[in-house]
Amino acid sequence: MFNNIYQNKKIFLTGHTGFKGSWLALWLKSLGADVLGYALEPNTRPSMFEELEISKKINSVFGNILDRDNLEKTMLAFEPDIVFHLAAQPLVRLSYSKPIMTYETNVIGTLNVLEAARKCSSVRAFVNVTTDKCYENKEINRGYREDEPMGGYDMYSSSKGCVEIMSSSFRRSFLQEEGSYAMATARAGNVIGGGDWALDRLIPDCVRSINNNIPIEIRNPIAVRPWQHVLEPLSGYLLLGEKLLTDGKKYADGFNFGPNEDSVLTVADVAQRTTQFYGKGEVIVGEKSPLHEAGLLMLNIEKAEKVLGWTPTYTADEAIKNTTEWYKRFYNNSEDMYKFTMQQIKEYEESIKWNKNYVRK
Image (cartoon, rainbow, N blue to C red; front, side, top):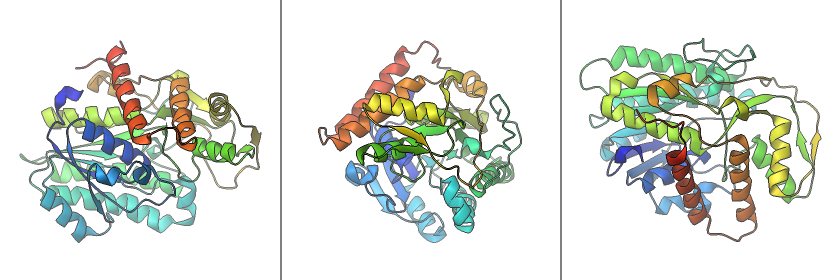
């Protein structure tokens, strides 16, 4: 996978205690990488990081990306080849109640990681993860392209738009000279997968309701999102990291990683399919939240397909089925969840090999 580029590479991974970070840490470890994770302690109970005992499988440091001295000290001591920056305040609704924390973490925190990497001469590549919500969303019936304006109605979305603008400025200001690392931003859609217990996440909320034998209450049933299994964007990040390491400046840009158009579903569609694959559960429409949430958001992924040779592998049904299967096994206490998670990673790797649309360039 990825031309064995990660074998024996030293990877500095921020946000490794989160949902996507936990999956990426395990995948990188399986690819032969030496991983050091830097993040706050898990903020959910349960958490994938703790349930799968990821701290026993990679090097792990609990720290805040706003603690500039500790961040720089940790990175400089480790001397990584590549940085994957996933640490963030990732919740739209939380950004309404904690706007300052959201901006500090997402904008200043990202700047701290970029600066720490600039002081670390070993760093050759930097994958900077943002979100599909960075775009100025006009709720148009097509996917946003990478060259369209940044924006954001809510504080989370606008903070990520700021991260994209700041990252572009940082690249032009400091990463042009010989010997500087190559940095790209990665924008993914709504990610699903086992091991996510964050608040205001659709499938985790569905699973909680099912296991508590209460109806699944959805607040915005006709909202449309680009749903994808967590391994889809992570494969994009890993492929982007490979390209940055081998021909960095050519790929130092922004890239969308989203599903095919037939996987762009409404909230109601996803909730109903979750109950179908879980084998039980009832979906009802609750009171609409007074807080603004986008009604329509899609990504155009032609650039990732043409420039990187990346394309999504799973259908929406495959993504939802794999996600619900992970939770069913977890709550049935019928499985070693580390082994099952690694099995899902291996199955995804096989699906890439058999996906005729996945073209390596």
